[in-house]
Amino acid sequence: MASEAGKAPAIPGRRVLMFPLPFEGHLSPMLQLAARLQGAFQNSLREVLEEEEGARPACLVLDSNLRGMQVVADRLGVPTLVLRTGGAACFVAYMAFPALCDKGLLPLQDHAQLNMPLDDLQPLQLGDMVFSTTTPHETMSNCLERIMESARYSSGVIINTFSELEGADLQKIIHGLGVPVYAVGPLHKISPSAQSSLLDADKTCLNWLDKQEAKSVLFLSIGSLASMTQEELVETAWGLANSCMPFLWVIRPNLVQCSGKVGLPEGFEEVTRGRGMVVSWAPQQEVLGHQAVGGFWTHNGWNSTLESICEGVPMICRPHFADQMINARYVQEVWKVGFELEGKLERGKIERSVRKLFCHEEGGEMRWRAKDLEDKATECMKKGGSSETRINLLVNFMMSLPC
Ligand code: UDP
Image 1 (tube, rainbow, N blue to C red):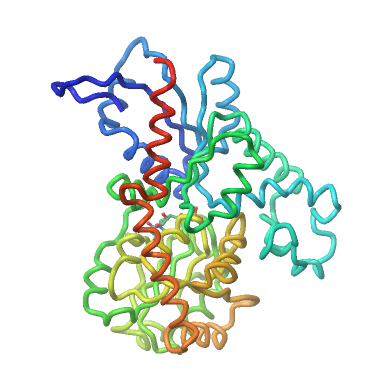
Image 2 (cartoon, rainbow, N blue to C red):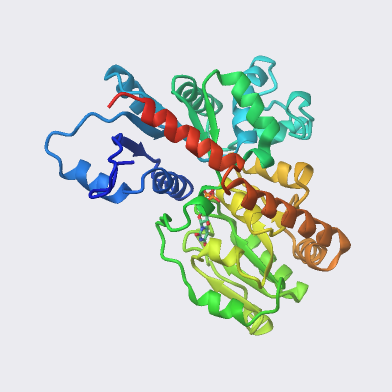
């Protein structure tokens, strides 16, 4: 936000420091927000780093998981804004978590309650609120409490979503928090060049996609953290092979959690030669935006979900943990742009799911609705659009802070 040298009239700048959480799904949205807010972001950052006696920042923008840093900023009298890299529905679910604990529903007592509908959080079910099966309940509760505190004690919450997608949940957050809420997404579209990946993407898959028919390819990727067993890998491989559809599959080095033999089954490569490609990391946003891609098998991390929506790509949802079950529920029940592949992964079920998405009328309807959401995402970024308006409000707020 610093004014550019040599240009008149000079607008007084504000120094804003931004702190992401060092995870794949958290880094890019923070950088994208920075790129949109600060024309001279890189120069400003360099100045801050090179400066011996740093000037006081007007505010800090923190990942919502960094409550500790906020406490320090409070002590120093520096205001903070909090970036939520997840969606609004997830945040509303986090807000409701303590009440479900008070009612004795969480931690889950009985597996028969997994499908219990949550009336105040429709269309969520109790199982969607079991964010981890390995993290102890106490740890999870504390973590969510800190996220809530960081939001409540902030000067505003910035969310990577847009109001046409999650308007009702954004209203709940505004009423529940008592601080301004800025829905400024989709950030990866607003600042497409400010992308940071911890892994190198294999761009050769784009050339391969160029040779495929329009909307014919299934793209499979389960993000940077989720994993599968060797047995699930094998079932997925044969499900894809038997579906006879073209596919692009991301198998990252640590995708399979297994101490024994890891790898694709014998014969798979021969059977799928020419119509399948495997990469260890893909340029996902470019892949989803490619005309050849017609479906996305996703774990429903929020970034992946939003990236799919913004390209009008319908989804096969296979959530693993954290907010992924919530996002998948919304994809299936609210936006109706995909469906969940539930239960044990089994080749016949996978084959049928792929065919449902690509060959059945139901899949076609999902594609049509996804296109509609893509248009809405495009609209909200235009001048006067909902997200563009919120970004301007956010900038105005930052500029109103004392230097
Ligand atoms: N991603 C990518 N290439 C891949 C797989 C994922 O660039 O092969 C990116 C994807 O575009 C998204 C991020 O990694 O921006 C994953 O974030 P998400 O919130 O979906 O999931 P997480 O990794 O946090 O579980």
